Image 1: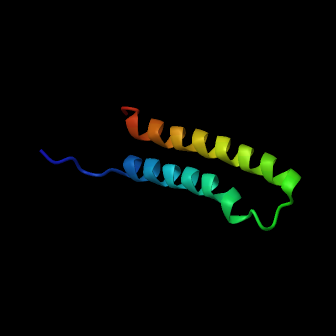
Image 2: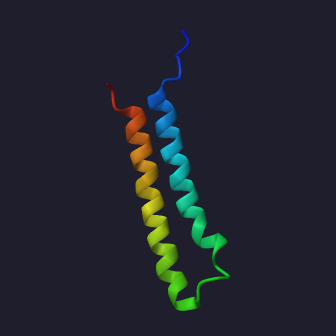
Length: 64
């Protein structure tokens, strides 16, 4: 039995991808931000990325 990929699966994958990009952002911008701002930037981006990944997984798992 094969399962077709629906638009909901694509949306969930896109949201998970955005979450991964949110988590990679502080490491890409470590040269731009100062030391004091980098800690807060990295913490907030990691939390936002984690929550975004969870939302993407929820979109895929919710039955319509």
